Length: 181
Image 1: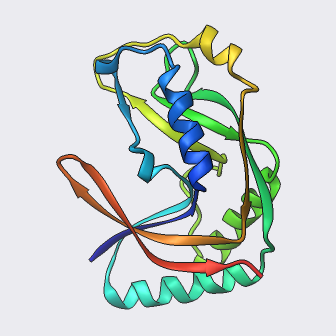
Image 2: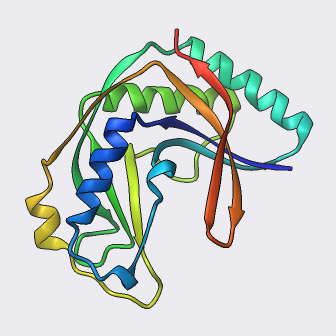
C-alpha cells in the first residue's frame, strides 16, 4: 500500500521566500508545527492509501487530466488562516495569478479520477498548523500580510507524491510527474 496525493512542487525560490516569511509570523515556537521547507507544496488532491493495481489506474487517469490542461504562471501572494485569523488552525500562503488554472487542474484531476474531494478546492500552501491545546491570535499580522508578494513560478507539471509518515514528520517522494499539454 502507498499513501499518495497529487501536488504542484514549488520552485526553490518560492520555498526559500516562504521559509523567510514564516520566520516573521509572531507565534510561540511551541504553539506551531511548521511544514518542513522541502515539503512545501500545493496539494491538488489527497488520495490516501492505494494498492499496486489501483496505483497503476490512478496514475493513468492523472495522465489524462494533465493532457487537458495547459502550462500557466502562478503567483504566491498573501497570508491567511483556516478557519480564521483570530483562532487559526492552519496558516497558509495564498495564490493570486494562476488561481483559476489551479482550480481547473484540480477539477480535471477529480473528473479523471472520478473522485470528488470532501470539500471544495481552495488553492493555498500550508505553512504550518497550530498545535493542539495552543491558542494563537494572528488577526493583525495576517491583515498586514494579506497582500505580501512571495513570488512567481511557471507551472508546467504536477506530481503524484508518495507520503511516508514517520515520528519526525512525513517524508515525501515523487512517484510520477505529469507534464501539462
